[in-house]
Every structure is written in C-alpha cells, then in structure tokens.
Image (spheres, rainbow, N blue to C red):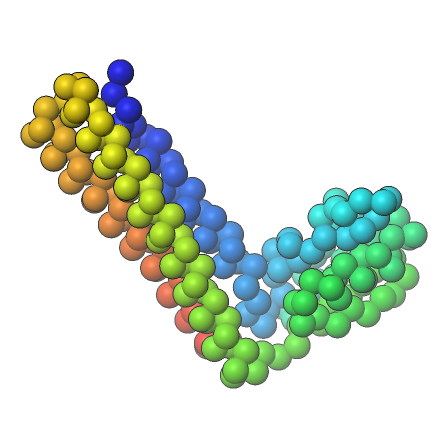
Length: 185
C-alpha cells in the first residue's frame, strides 16, 4: 500500500496555516479582541484553567474588554491571571466584572508586534516545508517498493511542490495583512 497520501499532506499544510491565523489573531492591534485573552491561565479550585472556563469575555467597546467572572470568589484569581499573562493590560475590578481598557500602542511596540507576526509566519512556513519533505520521502519510498513508477513519482512531487507554494503564499499573505493592520492602527 502506498505511503503517499495527498489528502493528509494538504490537511497538515492547511493546519499549519490555520494555526498561524489563530496565533496572529492573538496579537494586539489596539482594538479590543476577545481572542487576546485566550492564552490566559487562572488558578482556581486548586488547578490552572483557561480563562474562558471561569468567565465570559466580551468587547463592549472598540477599546475595552470586559471579563464577567461566574463565581465571585474567583475574581481575584482571574485578575492575577490576567496580570501575570504580560499582555500589557491593566485590570479594573467592578464587582464580578473586570474591565480591561486597551492602551495605545507605541511605535516601538507596533514594530515589535509586526516582527512577531513575521516570526509566527516563518514557523508556519517551516511546518509546511516539513510536511513537503515528509511527502517527498513517502513518494521515494513508494517508488523504491515499486508501487509507483519514476514518472509518477516526479509528477506527484510537482503536485506536492505546488501545494507547498500555495500554502506558503497563504501564510505570507496572512502575516502581511496582520503586519499592515498593526502598523496602521
């Protein structure tokens, strides 16, 4: 049975691009975005939990996030979790609601965030190229086992390269769009 599986290669390359888009959505652009708090972990009930399992996060205004904590006894823990996440946010508690005003981004911070977006894109492109390498190795193994001909292997290698080019271009496009968004806010 051939090892090469085009659908699996495409799924893994698409996964790398989707992961990049998810990472980029967490970068702060000056506008309030609920995904900004996705990486926040809170120590409650003797365990570390994601913020979204102990509170509701929404954006009532373009430059403000509101965290509605479900259990009043967890408000302090949620506040600490947000402070320890190093997001540059200053929590203000109002009963069971924690308000997080978005501070203005300095030019220096914008450049740092744009550079970080580029680093995320590079990681995604490396992941895509690793998937390409795996696909090429599978094709060579299939040819060695006489399951496909040399011509078939070369045709399929071209196919894998085209998929690689497509997904690398998607990663570049997503990063460029985010960098533009960060630098022009």
